[in-house]
Amino acid sequence: MSSWECKGDDGEPDHDWKYVSDWGGDPGVIGGTFDCSYLECRVCGEEKHDHPNPSEYAYQAGDYD
Ligand SMILES: [Zn+2]
Image (cartoon, rainbow, N blue to C red; front, side):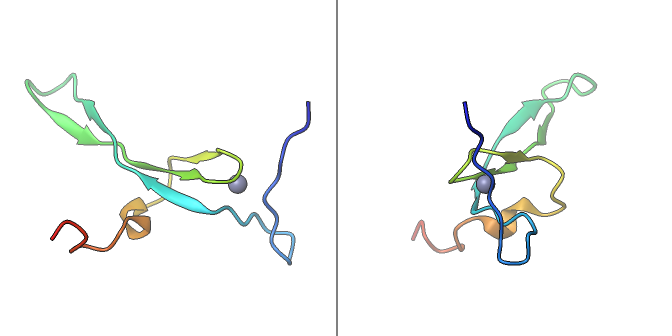
């Protein structure tokens, strides 16, 4: 079993992120939800949950027009 690693030219991780919109229930709030969207690499499937603003990888607003 081999693991693919996404490496850029400088050796830094270079994942091809896509935005995954996800919501979870908030146990502290009745009927509450929280945004737990995250990023997933199209190439290796790695997930990144600590990006401060994953929606910047989302498709631009207006795609639904
Ligand atoms: Zn990757």
